[in-house]
Image (cartoon, rainbow over all chains, first blue to last red):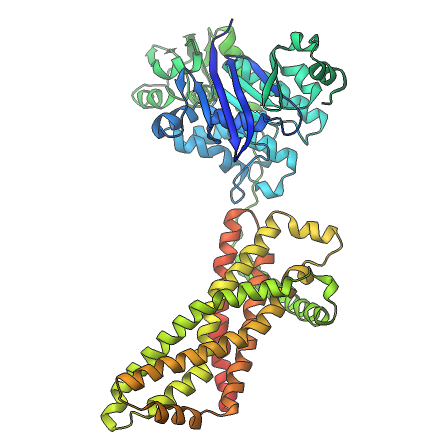
Amino acid sequence: MPNSIIQIRNLITQYGDKRILDQISLDFFENQVTVILGGSGCGKTTLLKSIIGLVSPAAGDVRIFGAPFDAADESHYNSVLRRIGVLFQNGALLNSISIAENVAIPLELHTHLDRNLIDTIVLTKLHMVGLDHAAYLLPSELSGGMRKRAALARAIALDPELLFCDEPSAGLDPLTSAALDDLILTLRDQLNMSVVIVTHELASIHRIADRIIFLDQGKILFSGSLTEAKTCQIPEVELFFKTGSF
Amino acid sequence: MNNMASDNSLKSSRIHCRDSLLILDGPLSIHTIPELQKNLKQTRLDTVTTIDLSGVDYIDSAGVAFLEQLTERTGSAANLQKANEKVQRALETFSSHQNRKPEQSPEPNFFESVGNSVYSFGESALDFLYLTSEIVLWSLYGIFHTGSRRKGSVIQQSFLIGSNAIGIIALLSFVLGLILALQSAAQLRQFGASIYVADLIAISMVREMGPMMTAIIIAGRSGSAFAAEISTMKVTEELDALRMMAINPISYVVVPKFLAITICMPLLVTLSMILGILGGFVIGLTYLDLTFVSYFNETISILTAEDLLVGLSKSIFFAWVIVIIGSYFGFKAQGGAEGVGKVTTSAVVASIFAVIFLDALFSLIYMI
């Protein structure tokens, strides 16, 4: 059994009076691709944001790399963030600078590498996502899929130990989506990266998932390996793996 | 916790040279490279032909980039040897040899830069004229055809531009009247001409200070809001969405502002004139010991309908300039949050400049 890299215990998250996540307890394991699944509004993105501290939980405990992950302890929070990469649903690239500059930001701010090395790493990361030819373009000059790939290049700029991806394949054509899946697998195998992905894409799930977390109305409906998920008797899970819909 | 990468951040690496062999030990990662680069400065590389990686147990993309830099410095003659399977795979994955260097367009020379500037100025001027004509056209159309905009939008804009600005305009105009009266009273009193403070305040507030002061406040308050709102709509593709719904963005977004400011500005200017005169009146009564009746009569006797007309007519032109400039910069916005900030600042600066310039122009016209 691999080591647990994220431990969540009794997590409750709510927006106002509306409870989004209800008593979630689960573990994410090292060197695995874990896919969080569930219908719209079931709390997938909120779970992701609760883990990385963008949403404050009402109750419960989140530990990353063995220590509590609390935005209130700023120095610890920042030191953990440097070991984490996050790909947001809409990319969240800074629009006023080129994508090469976007990718260079974490390298410039969090390392002492010289300019030549940073430039080489930036181009390598952009090449990995197939965007080295577009390095000096502004995000507004890219398509939605390209923006997402550029955002992924920025997320992996520091070779993080843990990568969170919020719907990485959404809006991408099947070929690009498959290439992105291959890249995620490469990152897992080459850098021992642990990856947490929110996605609905069945083809992508079959390709990359080591483990599945199935959410329904803020609770965990299923948690297990991909093989277990495919043979699961829970109607919602069974329906999804048969039809690809919830 | 047995986490490979986090462990490597704690380990250190070594580099040392033995004849033609350069030996690397430990992890080559983003954490260890800066130290290795420092050590490398004291190492002679000209005789190196082989780089021994047998001691390297981990390598990330920064490590690969470092190795490539190293082989380049040795004249690309050095061979990488004894890399374990994992390191070998990482070398293949993160190799920059497959990177395609993007083409950058060459920097323009002096004449090209001048040409580009003149061209873009001409283009901006044309855009401005085009937008102005469209706003005027759609506003005239909008007076009679209310279906092209959201119901109640003119009232809502009037509230935002007019009602919400009453307090600040009243206060500043009153204080301005006080200051003007105080400054002139000190001089006029010496010649026994204190009563002419009333004339001075009345004329300056009605013909100049009232309209200009109000226009500057509205430029800062509402002009910036116009530019920020329209530019945000532009960068979030809301204007494109309006177009796709067969709705003219100018008619939908700008015309309500144009009509509202045309109604509100003369009213706000009137308020500013009254409060400014009131400020002077307070000084006249308290500092100059004038009576209420004498000050009031002097003010009424000096003001003519023409003065009022000059002040109010100017204010309408100021209002139009503010809304057109705010909209122009809003539609010009590019990029994201920074683009919005830039055009908002530019809109305020340009509006205030245009108001003062236009005021000077009107002064000349009325003198002739």
